[in-house]
Image (cartoon, rainbow, N blue to C red):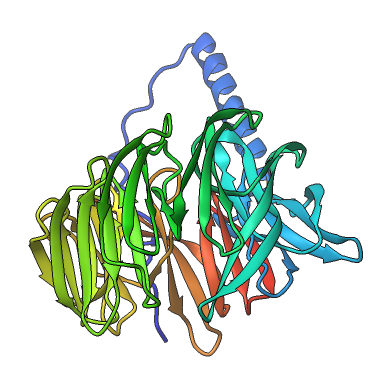
Length: 436
């Protein structure tokens, strides 16, 4: 049986009593004060002993079945889910603390998708969508979007098209034509949908914006012919254009982060080309990569997983800063990466630019995203035949873990949300557990 080291839980050794001293001579007033102090201590002990102990650090709060494929979004301490009934689709928000339904809002004929902007308390929900088949491929996009207050479910405003990017104060929408090409961009105020700027663009296959909810500086459009155009987010002004390789039927991945635009083209030999987003100046090009290369902006480096080797690439030059025989990496903030060992359920925290590990391997599955205090949760299986999963708290700065409790060994995915652990078991059962 696998055991979890909880440290020394034995009672601490008590010092031996000192040699008996001669009793002190107490005056009557001193005796009264001593008696009052003893009485106060006894009362405190009695009150403390009568209080019920609080719940354990890890304890399940509630669970419920969900529609197949209905993984929730999270906003303002709620799990927000699509529900389908005779009258169409609706969104319902469940309080993570107790499972109570906070609000329900009707959305259109069928479930679609939504984008959360929690600091601004908004949900951008596709109200109607269209599917276009072009060149043996299907493209799906929103024809109109409704914006809800994520705290109450109240409709704030509506806008034609699909929300592509945004922050706490603005949102960028795109218009599409009958061939699933983006033909117009509109920046609006997030508070009421009032226009900031509108621009007609060359028909594009995509608009690339940063994945973070922070304010973008630029967005880049890409046409089927490979024309790249950079626009300033604040006013829609075109900044630069350049020609790249045409977008064919082969898979590709465009990404933007920290003023860099990465164009990853997949094939028998995949390539990565890095540009500045403001001028579209090519910074570097890398070829000869495998067909299944994985790419991710990892803070100060670009993580490339190629042929079972992790490359930490300098985003400015394209040179390898370090490599490791690992299968994957994720940024966890403060210039650190979490890398996992190939074929084993263990991970390690390393410096992103140097690849130096200052702490040991961590057994178990590390969950994302980080919690509000910057710590991570780890699930580690233990026990036989009654298998359970220990819940540990990981300090990424030191690599130290602390056992908080345990949960059932369910088959599914778990995600930390604030002080909760939300798990989907078997794809159709949602459970919420309080942690810490």
